[in-house]
Image (cartoon, rainbow, N blue to C red; front, side, top):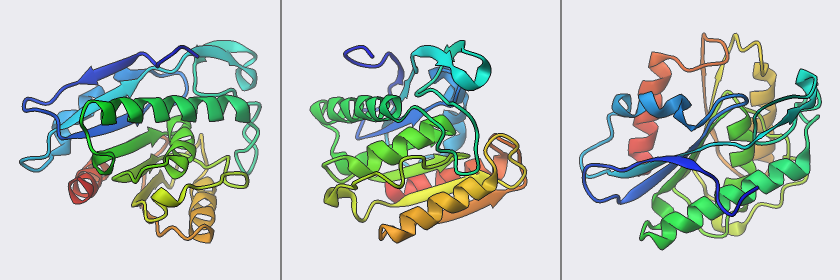
Length: 220
């Protein structure tokens, strides 16, 4: 991976006093969730800079080696979601750490930085958020999974990290059991994740966007 990930960066109208780093899923890019910003209804005085990084394009084993944007290779979708290229996931998590570092250098307090990730992006953010060495504002997992749960060594700085896990009950890509596994792993590590489910597939829905808005307003 390059020195820093290319990203779509959207500045607030006022000077930024927070940052939201939002990772897309397999085969998408940073523009995937750009349209959601106006619907987040952030409270007055909360002026986050949105950073939507673009994953590099790599061959995906599960898709016959087809090259597409991805944070890591997926070898197959087994029951626990762990048939992945772990070194690539760890490398992507380090790239997220660099993005956080950059925001801190720009004057954003680490405790005003939220990580959001959809699907593959959420898997990267579990690793990135829990291992970062300064306290973050929150971690939001959307239709995702936690493939590094058995190996991760969380950093004490984020032992009280607010975590929200959202998943669709009809998710045909990542079964909802993967979200339950994530929750069990997080609780075993001492975290207190909040868990919300929706009658939807591998996507977002309007009620969820309202809940995300409420959660972001509570953390920032």
